[in-house]
Image (cartoon, rainbow, N blue to C red):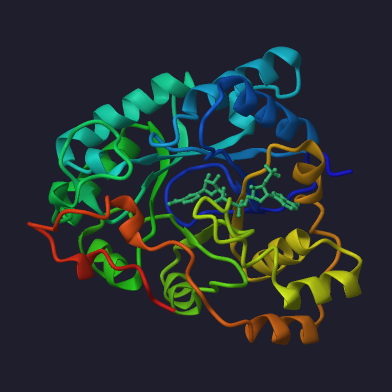
Length: 325
Ligand SMILES: NC(=O)c1ccc[n+]([C@@H]2O[C@H](COP(=O)([O-])OP(=O)(O)OC[C@H]3O[C@@H](n4cnc5c(N)ncnc54)[C@H](OP(=O)(O)O)[C@@H]3O)[C@@H](O)[C@H]2O)c1
């Protein structure tokens, strides 16, 4: 059984966050049921998770904060400082004057004094307004890399975000950000799994000290109804059978071996536990070669952020394009 202390940690190269546990629990679910998320986080803490991922958009900041507070009350945690908490700035909040107020709202939801990591959710800016998903194409605006990053740096300077970073950034977006950053981004959280391996981006980030975290490490929650390319992969199934592991464990182990942190969602205690049991065995060289040959396919395109109708009036959609193998 995985228990506290068995999950390796990664020291981030920017900011002053505590080291990040190499597997974190994702909390994006639809629809959100407060008690379900709270109970899932409590179950995760019981089996050894100390790293949680949320976002303003997910509306899971409150149940996550409630679960951490309850875990402290129950003695499962000594204090909030024992967990690594990430939240994210939504696209309609990507305006310099809205960044700090948005983080303050996040902290209020979490009932915490700081987040360990605050991320720009997408390199996409939308007109200010409710946290709409999907949004109208007409509401997309050119991204203000310098203005938004300065405000992120201010959040860090004030101690409200121990580290700051980005999500869904390509090398092209990172080029623009690094050209203006005083505090470099500590993390880039992106879609990454054996079916979308992101070799170009990983090499780029490794050379610049940006740690990569993987969302949908198991291929996501099948919101599009098209099945799950990771959990249904015959290559991964064959390896899993040979190693006496599950397909999920093979995927998470492969990600860990790439030096990437998985953010994995489960509301099932057994699967939560299983997803941490990846640190005392390894893949063989033959397994790694087979995985490297899996045909690549991105599951999520930036278009999901927008309604199908309408037109982009003030941005070039190519600027937001996230396809980069
Ligand atoms: N930055 C971004 O733009 C972005 C985008 C998407 C997601 N994320 C973050 O990343 C997190 C994870 O991604 P995700 O939620 O898309 O999907 P995921 O973690 O790849 O997949 C989760 C799905 O797999 C199932 N599962 C979990 N463990 C399993 C196991 N051992 N065996 C079989 N099935 C298993 C879960 O169902 P059960 O609950 O029934 O186990 C769940 O439906 C999100 O929750 C969110 O925090 C970030």
